[in-house]
Amino acid sequence: MLMRKFIFFFLSCLLFFSCNFIGNKDGSGMDKKIEISRYDKVLNEYVEYNSFSALQKMNTEYLLATKYLIEDVLRLGQVNDDKINEKLKVFYSDTTLRKLTVDAITKYENMRWLEKRFTKGFRKLKKQIPSLKIPRIYSQISALNESVVVGDSVLGFSIDKYMGEDYPLYKRYFYDYQRKSMKPERILPDCFNFYLLSEYPLPEKDKGYLIDVMLHRGVIHYIVSQTLDYKTFGEELDYTKEEEAWCEYNKKKIWEYMVQNGHLKSTDPMVIRKYMKPAPNTAFFGDQSPMMVGVWMGMQIVESYMKNHKETTVKELLEMTDYSKMLADARFNP
Image (tube, rainbow, N blue to C red; front, side, top):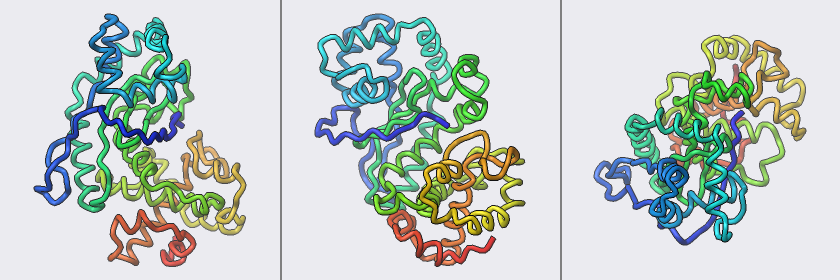
């Protein structure tokens, strides 16, 4: 649904933000709280006031954010092009984009609630996965492009993509099912899902079958659900109560349909897309079904696996790549 992608650069220069995590007082490897760096405000200061000091910050303290924004999110050119700064300023000076920027910064003037939940979530993950890198987190304005950007030890999210599904501008550019998740509550699950996906990508050898994709995504969403204390898997996936009830009621039929039609071992990109990608619904099951039923089913299988293997740690679960064995050991019986 959201226009997302991973952006990976292995840069040695990490001028971007001071480190927010030191010590090991609580056993999690995190002592200080996460502070969200406001790249959105720095960029706005440069665009609105032609501020040289803001531009300096963009190219030193926020070097990675600026590089990712220019080269990969907006694709305006190369960050070291002679005229790229002026080109960036002109781009963000568009009347519609100026209003969007002001509205977004106003809406997200206070991010303490996000910082608290980021801190709680990453502390929990760090305690379970000591080797996990804690990213430096920043907010940006992506001009309605990427929702989440993941790079070399950094994680950015675009506040202009989370203005609320009724934000007037969205109706010009997005379908109803896309707007549904463009709200503040989805920042945390989106960020945690995409960060874990970047740290634990689907192995190349497992990119063929639907079941591999289902279980890989199921593991990630299952862990995010636990990390952020969602009461149900449907809540983590942003399902309505009616959509989740539909899944629970039809779980056995969904599974039987997938098995009988040979979909679990399907390599057809269209089949995989219909089960796994955002859409108005899951096409195989009609208008009443929610989107991404394959992800929901993947979470169900992972839950069954964990109930039968209580000794398995979160780290071990993330590192599993034999999804055929995981399915067999899950003894999934909806």
